[in-house]
Length: 509
Image (cartoon, rainbow, N blue to C red; front, side):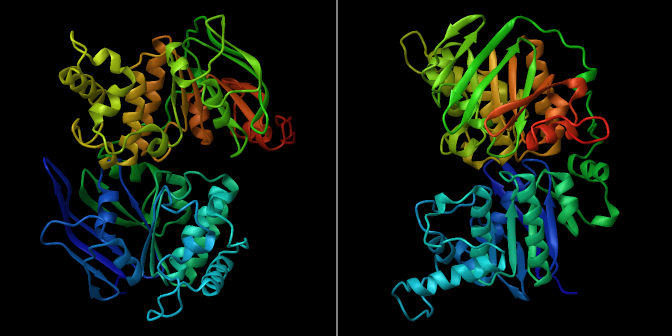
């Protein structure tokens, strides 16, 4: 069968960096094709070239639906039948659902220039109905949940009769139930003959949806493989070029040396967010906080760091009662907070890695006459770039040019430079490849060896189980249970998250 899409000899050179080197990709009609590789492997660059965000070096050839193509703008790709759904969705929260779906298709005729609102509503409702979603399309998009916004992005591709949809980390903000709904939608799209390029670092997810895999490593094409010829170990070896030990020592088996209590909260409450939260963290300890989406985990983290002031409750740092009124106040108390959204909350995307890493310790970057010492900034940045293996290792490049996983490393570097005693990290490996995920887990453990108390908020249960010394489970804004590492299992966590009780002998709560 002739591929719907064939990309051949795709190369891309940036100053000093070969991002892609003669990469190939072939996608069949009605196929879910996983594009996989470590952060910095070139996946995003390849897709940007396909849809016209970036241009390729000379010699590249792209054939789509039997026609040789080369797009200069993303709208050209959309009109040709190629849609890309970015990880941040790239929608307009202040516009209506119908407007988001029908941008570029505001009238029924190309010759009719005025917006036809009835036509837009009908088109939007029809596209959403195909996905099994019924909402008021006149509502502002921001009124919808992230999962429903994801469906709006997919509906937009249906309005443009897309033959190929690119999904970049589509489940990064979805609950387990919402992920299953997305799988069903993908299966329906495949039955209609629509092809999907699926980008994710979650291996179980990839094996659940993909028919074929294309692997990139260091900007080069490794190969394309049918799912039947792969397992997780082989896929990881292809990605990283070496065997990677996935199953690190569990928290229960580790020998840990806990120090004094570095953080304690009592009865912390915020109306509509969380209620009566009490727990403590000791030096050298990792406390995992998990629960379903909407349980109040992120809101609690923001309250601890002074970004979401609680209505009541007490907070103690190293035994002393404190009133954290702002993030600056939290930093003075040697706290650091790495947020869930690196792009909107963690980075200055148009600034260099040097600027991003040094911003939290700006006062230490001044010379004797109180001017910025760029050599100090660059030295600091290069140290963390090396420690965290940021790729490409170019301190002068803008943060927005990095892949998602490398951007996350820069956010971590920014806060580690403050030398915190308490580190709060929300979804530490969201959108990060398996190799980098292992590196970050090891990094967090090394930080506890230095006496740092760490709170890890994560919706990935294997991550929570692998890294936590204790696990707190949140449900509907409250802590529904606390589990020591030895009794922390996926079953116990899910029972606490869904039902509010641990499983008893025999499997029922």
